[in-house]
Image (cartoon, rainbow over all chains, first blue to last red):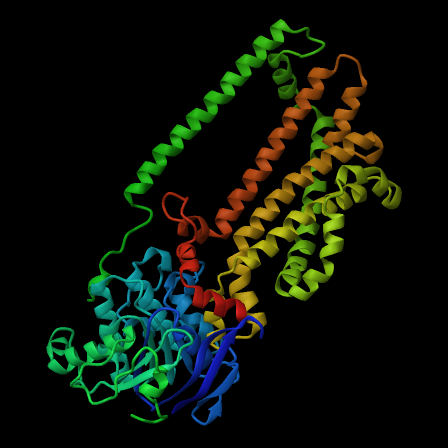
Amino acid sequence: MLEVTDLTRAYGTAGSAHLALKDVSLRVADGELVSIVGPSGCGKSTLLRCVAGLLPPTSGQVVLNGTPVTRVPGRLGVVFQDYSRSLYPWLSVRDNVALPLRRTMRGRPARRQAAAASLAAVGLTDAGHRYPWQLSGGMQQRVAIARALACDPVLLLMDEPFGSVDAQTREDLEDLILRVRAERGITILLVTHDIDESVYVGDRVIVLTPGPGQIRADLAAPLPQPRDQITTKELPEFVHLRSEVSRLVRGKPLAPSDDTPAPSDDTPARAAAPAKPGAS
Amino acid sequence: MPPDLKPFTSVARSPFAAAAGRARAIRWAQGLAGVAVFLVAAEIAGLLIPQTVLPRMSTVLSQAAGLAGNGQFLSDMAATLEAWAVGLLITVAAGVPLGLLLGSLPGVRFATRAIVEFLRPIPSVALILLVSLVVGSGLRMTVTLIVYAGIWPVLYNVIAGLDDVDPVAKDTLRAFGFGRLAVIRLVSLPSAAPFILTGIRIASSVALILDIGAGYVTGRINGPGIGAFISDANSGAGNTPLVLAATVWAGFLGLALNGLLVWAGDRLLPWHRASLGPTGQAGVPGRAQRLDHPEAAAAGTAS
C-alpha cells in the first residue's frame, strides 16, 4: 500500500518559490496500476520523484507499506522517459541491467544470469552483448524496463516511459507493462501526458491540474482485463472515459450526462473533484 | 517477436563505414598535399633568402635525418621522454583525484576558487628560474614544472566532466538505492572519462613544452634533454640548421605522443566515439533533449 498525504513541493527559495505540487493525496493498493495524467508542467514528474525518495517533499509525506519514505525505498524500480540518458553508454545492455544488482546480489555471474533472465522477460534475449546506442529507441526502453524488473520491485515508477518512441512501439510497450503487472502483481505508478494511454493501461486514472499540481479527479477505469489495443479501445466505456479524462485535462466542464459536478475555471479544481484518500 | 526487435543495425557494416573510409582517405591525401606544398615553398624561400637567415629546407631535413643516428641526441631525446612520462604520471595521479574532490563537493570548490584562479594564470615558463632555485636543477625541477603546468587542464576537465554528467543518469542509479560514492564511481567517473582524457592530452602537450622549454632556458646544467641539445646547438655559430632539425624532432615527438594518447583513449573508451554515431558529430545521444524537460531539469538541480 502506497499512501501519499498532503504532498506539497516547492522549488526555489521562500521568496520566489514556484509551487509544483499542492496538497496531493492518493492511495494506491498493492498490485494496482495507476495512471497519472495532466498537462505539461503539472508536477507529474515531481510527484514521482517524491514517491521515489529522490526529492524531499516541502510538506506532507509518502508512506510505502507502513514506512515513511525519507530516502529511496528498497525494491523500487524506476523507468525514466529518456532511455538514452538513463542507460549507460559505456556498459553493454546486459551490464546495464546487472548494474543495480550490485547492491543486492553477490558475484558477477549471478548478476549476469539475473540480467539475462530479465532481458528475456521483455523479449530481448539476444541483445545482451550489444550496447544501448546500437539499439532502436523501443528496444532501449525495453532494456530500461528489464533493468527495473531485475531488482524484483514491489513498486514500479514510470515517468512518461513511452514518450520518446513511435506509436506502434508504444502500444507494444504498454502491453508489455500490462503483462508484467499481471504476471508479477507489481504496484505501478505511470505518469503520462497521453490520455489514451492513461485510460488503456490504468486501473485508475488520476488527473492533475496545471501547476501547482493538484488532483482534479481520481477515476476508476473498470475496463475488462486483459486489455487489447483494438477491442478495448472500441468499447463505449473506453471512449467515454477517454473523453472524460480529456475534458478534465483541458479543464473544460464535464459532459452534462456525467453525475460528478463539473469543474469550472474559476473554482478551485480540488473542490470540484475532491480526491478522498482511498476513494477507489 | 515484437516488431521493434528487428532493426539490429550493425555499426561496423553500415553504409556509413564505407563512406567514412573514403572521407578518411581524402583527408589523408589533403593533409599530405598540404605538407608537400609547404616543404616546396620553404625550399624555394630558402633559395631566395641568405642561408644564415633561413637555412634551406633540404638542409634542415637531412640534418634531422642525421640526428636519428646521433648518440648524444638520442640520449637527450630519451631524457626528454622520461621527464614527460614521469611528469604526466604525477600530474594525472594528483589531478584526477583532486578534480573529483572539487567537482563533487561544491563547498570545497568555492573555498579554493580564489587561490586556483590566482595560481592558474601564472605562466609556468616564468617559474622556471624560481623552481630551479627551490628544488635544484635536473629531473626534479623539470617534473615539478610539468606537474604545475599540467595539473590545471586535468583539474578543469575533470570538473567540467563531472558538471556535464546527466542528472537523469545519476538519478537513475540513486533510484536503485545507491549512495553518493557509488554514484560517483559507477556513473560520474565513467561518464566524465572522455573529458578527463582530453584534459590528459592537453596536459601532455603542456608537459612537452615545459620539458623542452626548461632544458632550453637553463641549458646543459639541467641535465640531458632536447632543450639542452637545442641550447648547445644554438651557442655555436652557423648551427641554425641543427637547431631547426632538433626542433623538427620535437614536433614529431609531440605529434607521436598525442597520437599515442588518442589511440589509448579509443582503446579505453570504445563506447565514446561509437556512441556519437557514424558522423562523429552528433552529441551524446539524448543530450539535446535535456532542455525540453524543464521539470526534470529543475528536479535534478533541486535535489
